[in-house]
Length: 598
Image 1: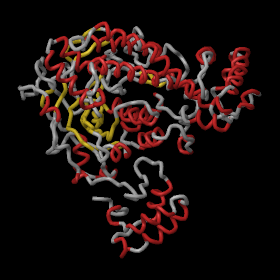
Image 2: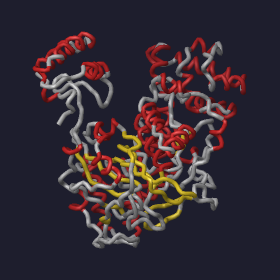
Image 3: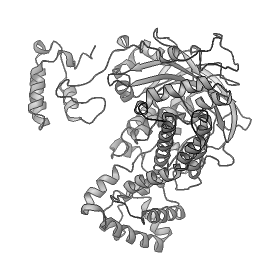
Image 4: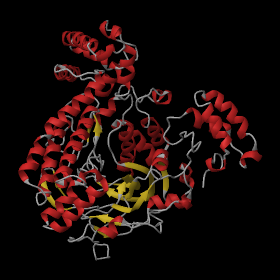
């Protein structure tokens, strides 16, 4: 059922013909379209022409888009029409833990345990991602006002088509095998196949204890949930592979957390995030089966992953080896994007590394502010194992553990050759993304040195990583050469002030390099393309902290405002500017600490 204000199913084909005829002139189409839709008899519904104009003119918007031949606006389903997939992949394809009681235990011979969410009291909806609701779940964003929907995403109402499972997996944590881990506070609700034919898995995080909770209480606090909600959508709109989120709810229920593990616990509000992913399988999903010598189940799982997520491999020869190569190359590409955008995950354990090579399980992450290759976002990481500069090597370590987990399915020598190609693939992909950030449209051997010199200057000047590249994309070559910086610039000018000679030399080399771009790319084109690769807005820790503080007081406006900004990170936004999202950091921001406590 469509929303009453704009219903594609009831609109006459005449309107589609008009749009097709006038699709090269949106304003004309809006005028004629508005006349047509002003006739209630013709439409059967009163439709606001402003909505239609928004639909026509915002053609690039992902949740209000135009399809001339089939529909005017995609508006999504009402919640009472929405259903999980009738086919439960996991219950039909894999052994489920036979014990139905929910208590912590060691499990073998199964990938999942059945467990239902534990209800929370007096839940409130903090925010939803309209785009995730519509693009992934085919839901009209208006469902956020539906009482049953809010209780569904809080875990208080169980949809009759759900499966309610927690996943068993293991992992190497900070370099050491930790044995059985599993979904300690996450519950898989079920699978959904959307109108695009994509299968997505819905999971609640913070929904109560499971057999894998170990010493935990199965809850997540509002503080960490706000961060995960915002960064999941931020990463997606930066075009970094990631899990998604649909909603965030908070409860009046509280739980104890020692945020910095310093012996000062305090009560914090609990929250639940509805997370979405095409798969929640991770390297640790395979490791637990290997170390438990459950080789038959391991083979079954890997064959399922190939069949469901890498179907093109099925027709190949050694499919397990080709699967491993695919994961190696995709992981190298993922981490190359992390490095290009200055993102540090914080806890790169093998149980947090997806077999689909998407960013998952956000905890003490951070985007670099001042450029510092040794940046450690997680204050709990005393040795800096997961620092920004170590992430590429950590990727290799985790892939080596995946190779071990698959050792019963492929030859070691062949797999080792593939693993050893990781560094080359990473470097190639990293330089590909960094050339885009620098506006270099062809490849030269000296590009790596040019980039390295810039990063060294940024480090010496303590310049902001994101804004240095962004401001470089907002200045003409002529103004750069003359050091004629706009007054609003606050990062790029630091480079010349702190390291004048080095900076002048670098600018000269950079401009000469730009002149060697293929096809004589104009400065206007360079600026436009660079801005598409250099965000103006990222989720800085202090911004998330402000949103968290307000949310704890019952004011969710900052969460929603940040979400809107982060959904369009490359474009200048007046509201974002007024809130100083692209301005120098406040002094108190440098004192913020983020830990594993969540």
